[in-house]
Image (tube, rainbow, N blue to C red; front, side):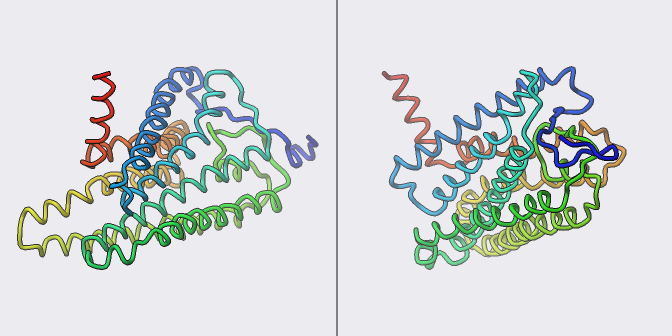
Length: 316
C-alpha cells in the first residue's frame, strides 16, 4: 500500500483489533459469544424445520417468522466467524474489499430484519383489527413480495454506502479498525478526507429504514391496543394480546439495543470505547440468539411441536 503525507492511499488490507481496551480478555469474551451463536443457529434452524414440516404453520405469521430465522442465521454468520478469528486465533487482517462486503452484508441483514418486524406488526394489525380480510390481504404472493421488497430496500440503500466509500475516500489516516467487525462508521472514521457526505447518508439510511419501521410498528400496535381494549370479553382480549406478546418482546429487544448502541456511539463521548463495541456486538448478536427462544416459549404451536420432537427422541 502506498503512503503519502502520513496517510495510506487506497489500502488493500485492514486490521480489526477486536474490542479496544479488552484485548487481554477477548479470548474469554469469545466463549459466551460463541455459545450465543450456536444457540442462535440451532434455535433458528429448529424453527425453520418445524414451520416447513408442519402444514398448519404455513400461515403469514409463521412464514414471517421463518424469514426472520433465515435473516438471523445470515446476520450472526456474517459476524461471528471473523470475530472469533480475531479473539481466538489472532487473525485480525482482512482485505479492504472483503471488509466492505462484510459491512454490506451486516447492515443489509440488519435492515432486512427491521423490515420483517414491520411486516409482522402489520400482519398482527390486520389479523386483530380487520380479521375478515386478513386471508385475502396476506396471500402467499404478497408475502413473497414483502420478503423480496424489504431485502431489496436494504441491499440497495446499503450498497450506496459502500459505493460512497469506494469512490470518495482514497486516503486513510490508519488501517487499524477499532472494532471487532467491519461497521460503516468504523470504516468512515479511518479516512483522512471530508466524510460529511458519508456520515449524512448513513444517518439518512438509518432514518429511512429503521426510523420509518419504528414509527409504523408503533402506530400499528397503538391501533391494536385500542382495538383490543374495546373487546367486551376478557378472554378475547387475552387471546388477542397473546398473539402479539412474542413479537412485542422481539421488537423491544431489537430496537432498544439498537437505540442504546447508537446513542452511546454518537453522544457518549466520555464512555469508554469498549462499551461502544460491546453494545454494538450485543445489538447484532442478541436478537438472533433470543428470537427463537422467545417464539419457542410464547408460541403454543411451536412449543408443542418442539416438545413432540424431543419426546420422540426420548422414547427412541
